[in-house]
Length: 176
Image (cartoon, rainbow, N blue to C red):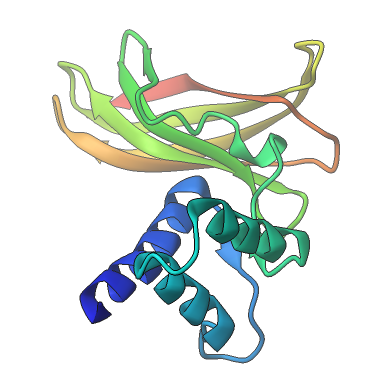
């Protein structure tokens, strides 16, 4: 029972990390309220049904204890998307509004280089509205990339406007 209980709590946090939601707690140390632990334990032990456990999770969301980002902040979350360019491929991209700096939008992901080494790869992060119009362009840089090397990237843009799509493109490259 103890192992199943730990697995359920870990599962809740893992789902939270993958889906991008967070638990809103006060203080410096993350604490899971005992009633959440008890509810998860009851579910693992079969004392409550799946529907009741889902209701408990929904309550957490409704009370702003468990936060799920808006559709806007989940743009390009599909880790199977691959964006190919003549310079390389982008994958595992995630684009979301920064909760600490509300006007900042960041895209992160992996860049797999092509056949040529680059000193730098300059990126454009393009934010589009629901009509497909560009509302903001931001930037990022990937430094010192060898042929076929995989590097993680981060590109940022700043806007208070609502966006529905994020796109990443290579603006300029400097060969080694």
